[in-house]
Image 1 (spheres, rainbow, N blue to C red):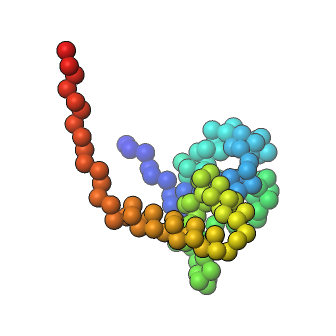
Image 2: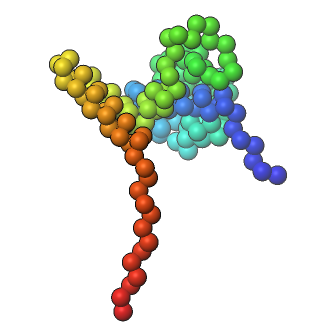
Length: 146
């Protein structure tokens, strides 16, 4: 019997754990030490492979300095009330990466509004070029000469 896929809420909660952990620059091993787990178990939680129990989620929230409710913000199938102020999923995905965190931190250090505006324009143009560019042709390997 094939393994059951992880529940979307468990995946979402795991992503939120990862986002917050990266946001405060905490390693998986350090978080594991705070809650009495191995970094491998933290990895499984972050991927949604293993479900996080309520008491464990409260411990993780305490270690990451957020309330347990933080992990459910924007969860699929949940009731959110006014959704106009929610962060788009693509932004959450970006912030869940080290590159995203570094990009936001570097951008925040730019104080000149003209430079910030120019940088945003540059990134938007690059993204547009990537979106409209056809994939590169596949090349066959050159034959080896004897």
